[in-house]
Length: 138
Length: 113
Image (cartoon, rainbow over the protein chains, first blue to last red):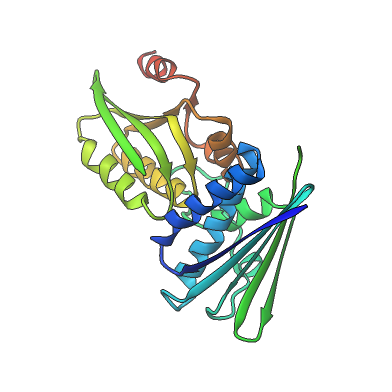
């Protein structure tokens, strides 16, 4: 048994609210744990925000497809921004220095890689395509 | 949606944050906190008991608040984090730079001892 959710958003920060609302409804329908729901919302917001901030085409469509199965969740995200692999091209965040010295930013991708079991990127024609897999623990 | 309710306890600003802090509303959160803080506040306690979600956009706002308080020797403390919120702080290493207390009373006690 699997269920799918397909979202087509515009690359604007305002659409994050819609993203969260749609995911809340899907999580309730699919019986996700609150932990899974939280992590998926966070991971997708972080990657979506990267597209908004660094994709170079504000307002362009961003397609996000979720496939929820008994043992795993697969997330596929594509956008037509400039070629950018966030999994490689993002600097390692600063997670150790003090308040004064701590650099701001770079945390989003670190959260993604920590919370997901698999993450991969490929450039497909004019599209950036990210695929994420999260195993379900329950 | 995010709501910030503040009160002043003995020169300490207590800010109860309710709802979620994400990239679409982080500006409201920053604005609410910035306008509430006065130069005379010796510390700010953010109470996250009713905070259900935070992304790195929110962490960034919290770090900026901590930096600006530190510039004048004031402190930022956090309390009442849910397991989910705590996980985000731990992965980001924010639990190492900001004092996190179980309750607001504990946070206030730490300032007065």
